[in-house]
Length: 115
Length: 110
Image 1 (cartoon, each protein chain N blue to C red):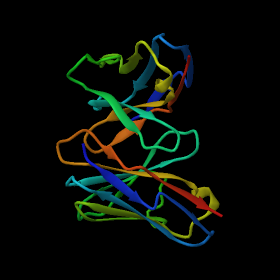
Image 2 (cartoon, each protein chain N blue to C red):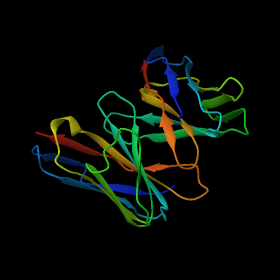
Image 3 (cartoon, rainbow over the protein chains, first blue to last red):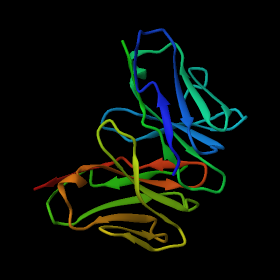
Image 4 (cartoon, rainbow over the protein chains, first blue to last red):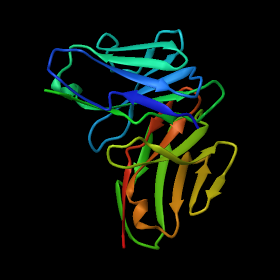
């Protein structure tokens, strides 16, 4: 399977600031990248899907202007949480996939705490 | 869109017993059904998956069954061990999207 990394693994930021999370596919040409959010003791909720070179497709209820996703290459996608608020505190996990492959390969996650 | 329900939310078993977790899905177009194990603070780990053209799949102590007509699938773990303790998620979907179940916290007591 693919090796996926995320950076940072954890981050604390102040309310109103922005924070960027990187997702890298180290050995896999990720034509599709997914971003999930997981609140404590809850399930993974898909936030958006991005295909390399295209705009991300956001799930209903996810603000595209607040959660900016960029998938500039087959190995890198970024999620920027703009004007963060305490309710944005969560575990953000990316995954990667490719055309014709059902399996998604998950990154280790980034724990965001907004104070 | 797809909706996945998962039961039970918690499951406690004695070491050596079997554990069964059940999921139902709503979208008949879903054709991929993976199961993940997630430990606290870690990424979901794929333990087994099944596609819609197969009714059952087994990998050592783990098996998954799929009933497309009834739109439900189940995870079976036999001879449970304390290290099986974790949260298990089912998911349903296809190439471009997976919808996750609500999770089952499995506790295996020695």
